[in-house]
Image 1 (cartoon, helix red, strand yellow):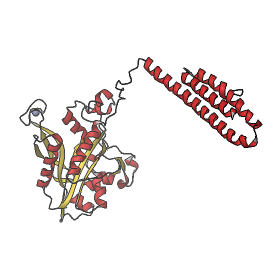
Image 2 (cartoon, rainbow, N blue to C red):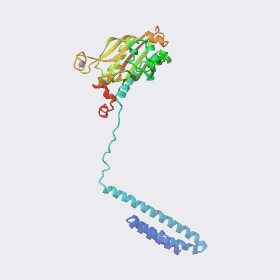
Image 3 (cartoon, rainbow, N blue to C red):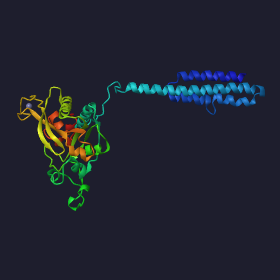
Image 4 (cartoon, rainbow, N blue to C red):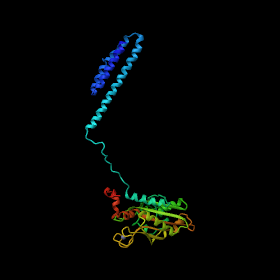
Length: 350
Ligand SMILES: [Zn+2]
């Protein structure tokens, strides 16, 4: 049993050494001294083969146990020393880890998207559903079905961006253009759905305009369409009143002025009372107290009949507005072209 005692003694010495070790080199020295090829423990293990066979098993087990323990303890000491080193390094550095971090700049939604979302939210709250349609549109949906027959001035080349040379086209119905308003969505929707229906259609529209402070060739519209039994002009006015107050504030009033649109009869333009003078008249509203915001009217029976809706039974109203115009009114923009300049200093204000 002398061999076991010798191993236990060596083990104890090795542990004492590990306790005193200051760095990884000292730990490595201990490992070589006891577990290296010529190490104390290794040499003792080699002597086991000379023992009698009945001792071999007991001594062998014990010796392996000691070797495994020592290996584990050396590994542990090395890892303790290295984590201690990291802590010391952290203490040495002057960096203050408790300081707040730098926030990366966050993007925000474009003003146009914000206004579209706001308008959609108000109208969805009133029971409308969102409908969508293509920006590249057929003449039929953009004009003919909306009571704007061939020869109407709105169809002229000065106003509309046609995608094919219309002089070569033998079939007027197949003319392809960029939609000049979002109204074709109403026709496409009514072709597939029966009344009662309450929809809003937000989207881009295109006209052959030279860009100036209040016009861009591409702009955004949002339209509402309601078709139901017994709808009256009073329902239209009530809807717009609720809508305008939610969008601009409870203190604002609306007024309707008679107007003409091909696809509604009667039609009106809607003004909102000026944000600055609330109707009294000031510089912002040009002295008349009101600012124009949208167009509306009762859907022309011809439009309903065109999509197979019984105009004796159902009546409809529609309203449409320019999103850029609302941006101007809500934020006092002096030039809508700024919305498309991609100048972050301008856009991040909203
Ligand atoms: Zn005013």
